[in-house]
Image (cartoon, rainbow, N blue to C red; front, top):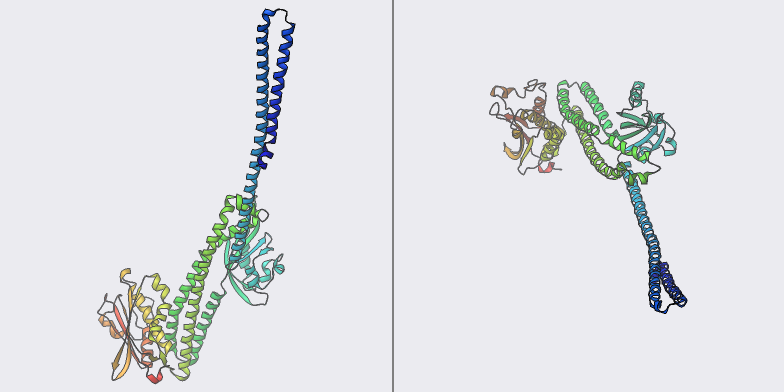
Length: 519
């Protein structure tokens, strides 16, 4: 009630004043009429004059009322306008508060997204002269330098001297023309150790189309590079070990087995390379560039600019994509390490055999089958080859673990090549396990059956001979060495086919582990 009175005091006072003016006008009109009547000398005209006076009083009374209403309307209009202005001011203040809250929320989201990106990418920004003007925490972490040590320096502080001068000249020539550049760079940390990054550099131009800065986004590929170097080292060691042992034929067979694994290593490396090439790095560079261009008015940019409004949602989606991509790359790197480990075990078993012969142990054939499938998994999935399993309960086998794995990798590789000649819905490889008794001794029969091109009857006796092959580009070492390895472990390797187009079945028989030999 008090608030209402405060707001309407001017209006009430105006109405009161207008009422007083109306009464005063009425009284003045009556007095004027009376004076005119006294001065009138004719009594017979007194009633007419009285009517005239009353008429004048009514006119004045009406005029006063009209003035009162006009003043009241004017004051009410002023009061109403003031009320609307107050309401508008309050509405604008509310909008400003909401806009401030949205800007603060957008800034918080940008801060959180920047933190998330720090865990997935290595970011840096350099001016047009190559001087570093900004880095993220991931850059500092991998390089070993603090932000203060990096700002104002060029990237030569990380130069490992691994790349020739022409490499850097080509890079600067490309980005100097305003075009993005991508490559793999070997850098040196502050402590002197080396690391590799897959780097994308995107130039940014001003309104005059001149390059003003460079935004670089990198991903750590040190693990992949180390796996490749380890692969090359093991290959060299294998050749040297074979040369020293004087076992040329065996070394050739082992190289063939390692080659099968190397094919899968190369496939994994290619998958990693393709994923890196298709990465959303350029989009991230552009988003980071937009944010940096609006450092001074970031809140307004995020709230008002159409591009700015899209950045939080875009970065959220990009962060999810980068996280998924990172997980996939880590899976491929893990696969690389496992393949390299298998190659190392192949070499180790060969060296062990050269020194002291076989070292058999209790092994689970189901695990080795799954390992051989995993080694070939990328090409199996790529070519839509279906894997079937029929495992009966079996005891462990008593054999050299990595020789069995070599045989299985060879058999899977050959079956894979055989089924590629058939239609996609006929690309099947089946593994079977069952215990059998031979001459009173418990053995395990492992069969690998494919739905491929099959083998002609005239070729079956030659299938395990050294140098015999039906595959284009083959050398005839794999099955030959597999048969030798099976005999060395007290087993045998056989083959059966109904003929061309009927598929083939390879059978490996291995002694079962005795109870006292079970580990």
